[in-house]
Image (cartoon, rainbow, N blue to C red; front, side, top):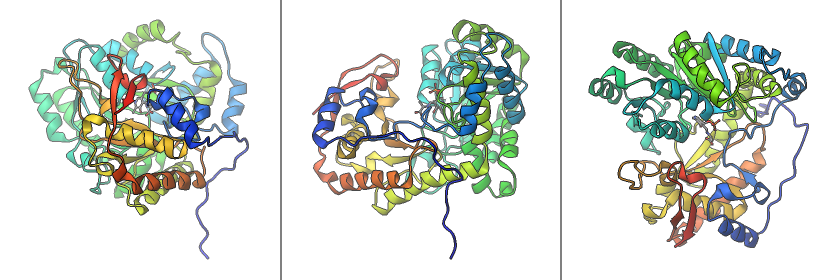
Amino acid sequence: MELPYTEPYKIKTTESIRQGTCAEREKWIKESGYNLFKLRSDHVFIDLLTDSGTGAMSDEQWAEIMKGDESYAGSRSYFKLSDTVKELLGMPYFLPTHQGRAAENVLFSALIKEGDVIPGNSHFDTTKGHIEFRKAAAIDCTIDEAFDTSGFYPFKGNLDLKKLEKVFKKYPKEKIPLCIITITCNTSGGQPVSMKNIKEVSALCKKYGIRLFFDAARFAENAFFIKTREEEYMNVGIRDIVRGMFSYADGATMSCKKDAIVNIGGFIALRDKEIFDKASVFNIMFEGYLTYGGMSGRDMAALAQGLWEGTDFQYLESRIRQVAYLGDKLKYYNIPIQEPTGGHAVFVDAKRFLPKLPKQQFQAQTLAVELYKEGGVRGVEIGTLLADRNPQTRENRYPKLELLRLAIPRRVYTYNHMDYVAACMANIYNRRNEITTGYKIIKEAPIMRHFTIELEKL
Ligand code: F0G
């Protein structure tokens, strides 16, 4: 008999979770203004809100926590981390920050000014927020294939070179301080970017004299997809692919809460000394001194270890397989998802799930609330609420994709948990025709509203 696939780790510590009752969940979600961010985690059974900072650290990482050096300046743990980043990514300059958006804040303070444009592939919301906060604009150049959730395309995170060149031709290069490739592209469904596309975008950027940066939160998962979906790289190791990817970039911001499997941490990696010097001033102002940047010594030590574990093929295989397993289960129940499944999450297509619900009533958010009520599973809306309003017209922006993201924390849940989530979704799918009304906004913040928004049931 062929032996079944199993994870390359065993579990040492457990944490109890409680399901709650339907009546309790009805009450808790209403009290939270139908905003899943406002729920207490004790009121959530299976938490698929995010894969960010929610992973389980290994014994080796916990050992590093004990070894952390808490010196304010010149900490041993800083050097451990900076050596790891340099070795893995091949970038000579490095600034630690407390998380990904902090890296964006520091880097963009050094590079972006009012009136600039920053092309990329479906910028993540904090990235877009930091761009728009500086009165600059994020221009989405993702390929059209990304917006057809049912069509199979192996690299739906790719940038469309024609769309990108149009931006490069329309604006003078002084107005384009950088182009950002998000690997994998969270907003389009955790979808990877091919090495071929990275090379082509890099060549185009060079032709027009534009810097190329990565939003590298899930760079290792992206490398796994390059290895498994791009024939040329089938026999290349993950870390060699990673080195190859970064050889095309001028720098990167990284939220280490994802692929480095830590609960907090971030960094900026750079090739250019001048940008490093400029960003260093902002790092000291916003984050902390250059050798800790908002992290404790133990955080940096665990992060260095996490970067090695996160780029291990066996680990990545178990990770991506679990995401695909949930995707396959949902498809078995005929539930429409972004295909093929991406790196960190399964994205349910709420427009196809609830076609009769008007988009003005927030289809993906409605589905997220239903899933919570059904079984205490917390997902997150990647749709109109997240897309915010147009900064000029203040009208709602209706994105092409209206998705419910089920993000899977790393090394946390079992296959039984995935079966449970899929069964909850199947129950909702079976009664989808009864879901005829959604929600209206009663309170919202001027930017990044989804975190604090309050809704009312129509
Ligand atoms: N870039 C990407 C692609 C992200 O997914 C995130 C965070 C960030 C940057 C910002 O990093 O949270 O460390 O400040 N994504 C989380 C998520 C919040 O749920 O997808 P951060």
